[in-house]
Length: 470
Image (tube, rainbow, N blue to C red; front, side):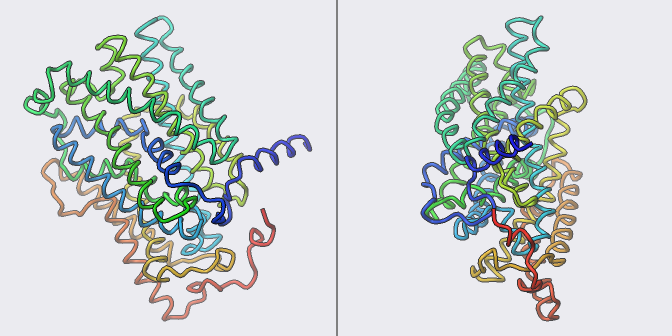
């Protein structure tokens, strides 16, 4: 047992990135390195299906407009939360200790970690399916084994870099970005030229499953709401505020938009036959098939590593331990969940429902954090170790109410069909704004009523986490 503990201790020390404490200014990273990570992180091929759903439901021009608008809104949200993390040097889950309390933050931390595990699983599943389709193309008798080969490859590429903390995601991003951009542009050009040019797509494509523009924007936002809200996990490492203003927008407006557009373009160029570039490329020759496989491999690598790295920060806060063991564990759990999806769940329907759920529940947590920092405390928060409050019912009440209303508007907008406009607001953004307003009002009432849990200094006795050290 001593040998195992010694091994875990060395792993934690090697991969420790100030997981459960403030990042010192002299150990911050450059904006360029954080931008590279964000660019790779957002090229998440679990969301290519989202682009496909948007492409199957809208004209290509409208789909691109919905994608750009949705990601522009996400970039703004990522800046509002990212600046808090950058200035305080704390990740998202550690920041939730301010409004929720240091024990109250455990629940949103675990929930957020589970959500990221879900995205990690979808990334594994999509990449493994790409391998299966390629095996089918070149050797149909081995097709069913292609899925398991894909799972094994993605597991190895994800887990190994996690031993090295921030250096793992950083080097993965620098290596993988050229392997993403060039094949992606090549595949797009092949898809367009195969149907006779972009004008053919713009003039003749009619979406087979029409959705409204609002639904399209909601899907786009739902695909990366969590990443935008939890931007402090990466931006906390930035040397200056430029890390918040530049890195997340580059990833969302450029990286994520390109992936979603590829899904929409695949749907439009095949006239609604498929959203999947792998299926489309198998009919376009070996060159296109190889480019798609290389694109999936590089994108999976660039996304999975920072996704597991960020998810582990949520569990590090919840269980008061450095993140490395959590990161590696998540990288090993996701492949088993991917196999479960492959053989028991309709993945396209599952991810649509998953995004709808995310659109309701995740944004209010970020809204509460923004209200605490920007509006209630006026950018003046104490050191995290000085927060003695254990629980804050106001934060939970605000979260529940905002999520419930947000969920209702999401469902109402969906049921209204293709003709729905902005009468229900913009699901996802609704929850973020509502949480800011509700928490601001309810917190003010609690302060006036002088309830004990309205103050950071509620509990005289500190939680053991604050006195035991790392």
